[in-house]
Structure formats: C-alpha cells, structure tokens
Image (cartoon, helix red, strand yellow):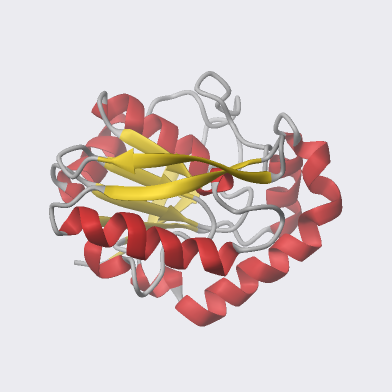
Length: 209
C-alpha cells in the first residue's frame, strides 16, 4: 500500500480549485476536536480529501490505513483495530494507540499515539465500520462506481505499479467490507469526486442529519 499521495502530490484534476466552501461545511459538522472517518474504494479520492482537510485544520493529525494493513490482507482486521484502539478511546477522552506496518521490512513497526484534544482524520478502505461510526464526529463515504476509472487513478499514483498485481485481491476485500459493514449507509455525507477537469472537486450526493 505504498501507492498514495504525499503532501505535495494531489492529483492535478483534484488539486485546483480548493473547495473552501465544502471543507468549511465538513469541519463545521465535525466539530473540534473532530474524529473524521473517510472511507471508499481504492481510487475514489480519500487521500486527496484527507490532505485538504488537514491543511484547512492546520493542527490536525492524519492516519492513513495504508500504514497499518500489514501487507495485502487485513482490511477487516485493521478496521476493527482502529475502532477499538483509536476512535473509541478518543471519544472517551483517552489517548488512542496503534502500531504501524513497516512495508520495507515487511514487519510490525513503531507505535503511534493520538491525543484526545487534537483532531484526527482517518482515511482508508475499511475505516468506516459499525463499531467505529458511533465514536466518530464525521463519517464520509466517497462514491465513484466507475471501477476502470478508479483503477486508473490508483495505479497512476507513485508506487502504483506495486499495486497492480494485487488490485483484484484488494477489491474483493473492499467488496466484503461494503457487504459486511454497509459503510455508505453509516456515512453522514456521500461525496463524489470530480470526473473531469473543471468539475466541482467533490459533489455531495447524499447527506444525512
């Protein structure tokens, strides 16, 4: 899971213009300190949105589930772990703690701790679960049903060639997650990313509450 955007690597078709009105709306709904979950299938724009939200917050923390999966398996396991070890403790005013995966060494890496008085944005497939949803302050699902387009976007990222042979295996885990947890139904807002240059960067297609 090394194929993701760095801080200065927003995809060209998603970078301009900055959707200031949408970001402010999301942050108003999330409150402070916020606990934001951004879920959706690969290539749907989760990382780009998380980076923009963190930039707007300024002092928020960002947790990529890519850093936790432990290889090309474990989507369900990581979702459970994030709920019980990070999101739920933070909602009680306690510190959250999770161990990252060292992809270079192919072994467990260092522990990361999260303070309850700071906003945390969690992005990644499997983040929005029935266990985590009640303890989050904002739940987002990114909806892009065009799988060829999602695949193109995901494989176009830096490191995307490493992802190519694992696409189908990972997609099967994402489909199982969607059937098991029904994350779209748990979301406060369902967003659709831009399909073409000049389109709104994200469009709200469903909103609850």
